[in-house]
Amino acid sequence: MSAAAATRRLRLGVVGLGRLGKRHAENLAYRVPGAELVAACSPLEEERAWARDTLPSPRLYDDYAQLLDDKDVDAVWLVTPSSLHAQQIVDALRAGKHVFCEKPLSLDLAECERVLQEAARYPHLQATIGFMRRFDPSYKDAFDKIEAGKIGRPFLVRSQTADKNDTDGFFVRFAATSGGIFLDCTVHDIDVARWLLGKPRAKRVFAAGAVALHEGLREFGDVDNGVAICEFEDGKLAMFYASRTQAHGNDTHSEVIGTAGALAIGHNPRANRVEIYDAAGIRNECTPSFFDRFEEAFLQEARAFVASVQGGAGSTVQAGATLADALEATRIGNALRQSLQSGQAVTL
Image (tube, helix red, strand yellow):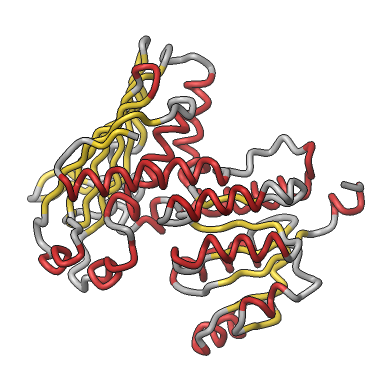
């Protein structure tokens, strides 16, 4: 990449302007050095109206193919339904665009493999999947400490994604297409565990679950609380917990155990450093949603993606999870769903 190309701002088009898409669009428009948000796409007029009012005059499209035809768009940022991801990534690469796509790559393993095969034809284009926890300052600090040997050889990760109970039942309505609790929630913990353990390959998994509050999940074979164990190569292990029913807020945390120590990341999901002393005791308020818990991570992953593309093939910036990482997360998540439904351990 020439020096001029490296210093030119990366022109991005965001696709999908739902609750998460809006956050990504605002980050790209106003908070990411080197980025220029030049286009936005949504089939919904109310979302395009939001873009007109909020973003710095992007070109607006209601059709993805039209955005891909825009010669002024260097990269696309996909925040669309999971079922669309695989083909949209392929279409972007064929159009000569770099791609950032929210997780998952696909809920279907064959589709993941198809995207990897297609991406191999375009080695000059970058394709990154949005496992944002890799960019959370605390998770990144833990990763760096592990790499420096601070806890010896890591061999066990315990990780959870626990959402505040949503009495409106958004995820129940979403259950038909979400892939289930392990592919929708635990997939982040799967990626974190593989990342912190050195990307081992999974050998066997077992999962179980319960419907504690949301009976509507039963017709989809889903649960609102699930636990799982994953055995990796070389004797490494991971234990996962996923929940939709927490009373206190979004409680996402992990622990890494090594031969010479351990690291705990986010055990207290505190919203800030204020502690409340009253008749109920001593406590702190918690992060209400994953948006609040990982606000900084979403921003840092966007900055890293832009810097990595601008740096070209020789860039040393870590752009995030690769397509291969996302394929492995889907492979394990699918196996967990199969184990949950069968009641049996699944060998990969």
